[in-house]
Length: 383
Image 1: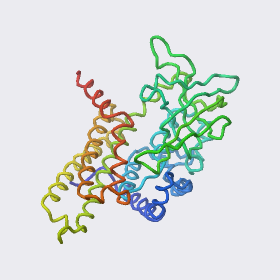
Image 2 (image 1 turned 90 degrees about the horizontal axis):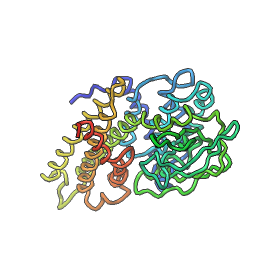
Image 3 (image 1 turned 30 degrees about the vertical axis):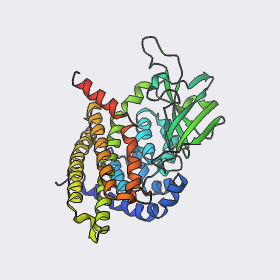
Image 4 (image 1 turned 90 degrees about the vertical axis):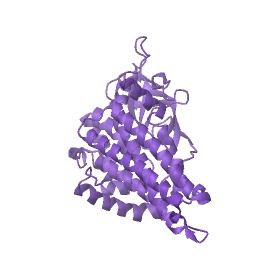
């Protein structure tokens, strides 16, 4: 079926970005994969291309385009190329919405030039070693001391944490209330060069190998009061506001990975010979890929509808949860079946399908597990 979600402008952008990936990313990707981190220069090259400023207002050096569709194109094209761009997704899809919503004009003037150019990459630090999804239980603290806060604590699973120049850190500025344990959390834009700020282990993940994920620790880190994001003690309410977009981004990524898996697998089975016959000629291969095609077509319809709703300001938390649940589960099934069609080679990391298999697994965990998505949907049904 013909897609109507993207315009000619999006398709021109797609061609430009695809060419960039082919020339600047694909030739170096194996090296980055082995190192477990992308080349830092990648970010400034993306900045030069204008990628990092698409949704940034014009007065702060961006293009001022209020649409998630360009991010969707980025997602589709990186999956198609079988690559990952490190912390770019967190920089654009997670951090930027907080800055656009909460940063003061003075803060935007300070931060946006580096954000748009790629000279200052951002990450966000919520999860702690002992809290997981229970953000209200975080133990990191930020105590006011004159014109600054003194930050202490630790975070884990921080995507982009190794190369980040600023990190939005969630910390307690007041004890929780008996009637509201979510009260008392604040957000800070912390300079990673601050004394007492330390990057711990770069975590060894089974997938997303070029996405540098780290442990962070803060020991009496002094954060200027001018780097507080939003109102003190109201941070938890801010954290929930970006969840629909975050979950839409994960859903779109899962769909794009499943689409890429079919593309990689069809090319493989048409070339691979077994008993002197292309694997693509076997009935089982045709049936498996046809079934995968139908599932991915359905996922595409879901994410396209969700994308239109998001750009119209109509994507609800329930809609986003439904899209994430459906698309991530589809991706898991499709990529597993595509790997099976590769036989033993599908288990080798030199093949894109093996990397997709490992990369996609986490989509059913981060941004809210599939079980949490089911709870959201069940509650919306009155169950």
